[in-house]
Image 1 (cartoon, rainbow, N blue to C red):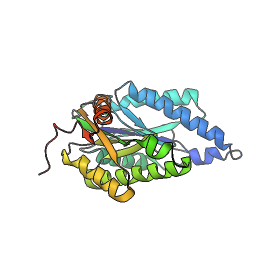
Image 2 (image 1 turned 30 degrees about the vertical axis):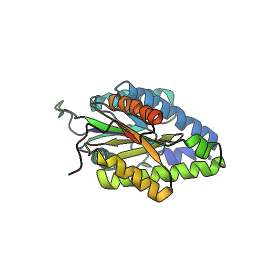
Image 3 (image 1 turned 180 degrees about the vertical axis):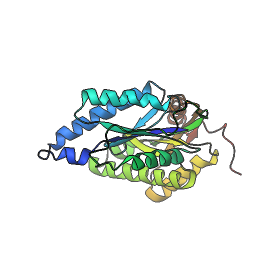
Length: 256
């Protein structure tokens, strides 16, 4: 599968030059930039994740890596910053991200003023092995509104859900090389390689044991993140309607 890593060039020094910039201005820029990135990636049926905002990434199997030069031009024309992009491929999301990370780090430091609009994509001879299918798992907390949102201090609700998301992310990364990200509300999306049907029950059990929260998950499997994610969304809606904890994993192989 193919992962793109986007990093704002020389962002740290820019935020303090010629004087420290207002935090709200920085947050507005980051939010707008991510919105444009998500829209760009969506054109290729990919999924974008905000990462740390100055670092963003996407799972996008469809585009030729050179297509990301168009996003770089968009940023250059509309923002007071530029971005560098690295694209990696691997058998798992984490492996692909590792390739992209290595390529961007080899191109220069994130705070190197000489590194501008690098497009680190490896071989450019046009020969690309075909990307295979991927699995999207869309998790959320069972009945979060009545159990947390309408009962607890909003700060504590956020802490509880973020802790559950981190436990889930760590478990899936360590066990299956997945790329997992909190995407707002009580929703967490995991991009996975081919895994067994038992993977998701084990993940739910782990989060329950560590945090006390009960998760449910819809699973989709297809050639693009968008197609797999749509399957996962519909499967999650079935969980909400039926009370099932897992839907959509029925076609995946059982654990050996």
